[in-house]
Length: 264
Image (tube, rainbow, N blue to C red; front, side, top):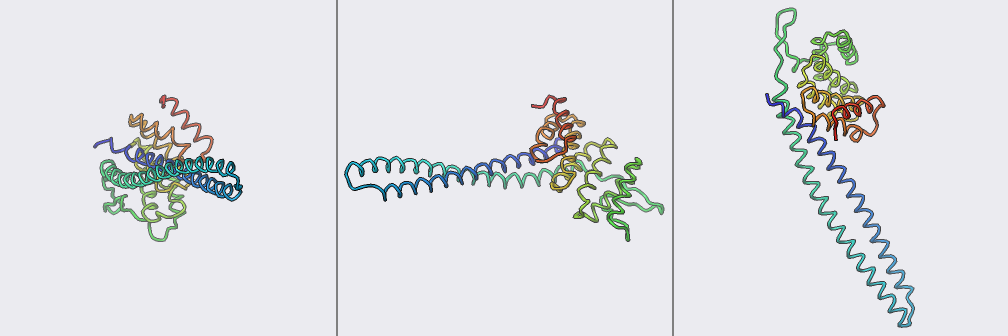
């Protein structure tokens, strides 16, 4: 199994974030430039209207007009440059999006080896990857049962229930939390490869969820456990930037881990 696929997802996601940040900055600069051009043009027309008949006044205005004209040409040149860079960024963003999907798909194929089929009381095989929630059970009830199993260190049962929840209720308000706790199951089992995948899906699929920052932190810890210092540092250092608001505890833990690894 090629462990190198494990961290490709986070690297591409952070690259995408950087491109988006550049895009926002350039668009702000473009707006400011266009506003400045409008102001200069208005100033030119106002001074032209106010110019008096004497040759000296007209001559002075022509000098200023030439200066304004030159400034506007320079600004238009900058506008063209920024628009070109924006087009380039958009193409780059499209490429990154495609790469994220491709690499993460490859990553899952190499790391999510199908678990050995388990048997139920009747001796029939079952598979967590395809597990569905039992009939008649409510999402919150299944979620609470899974948490109870996790707290009791019944990791196999917790894995089954969280998998059932995610397969049956992927858009439920608790889905992001369930994804995080599934990662915790693997992390407790010291299956850091599967934990990394679970946490990556947690913060990429549910970025607005309450467990988004937790997922990225634990993704970093999973990478650290796998001996991938650079990728762990990427997660720890960028966590406060990717998530504008994080709890003091998570921020402090990310900082502590980054310092422990001497991240740059």
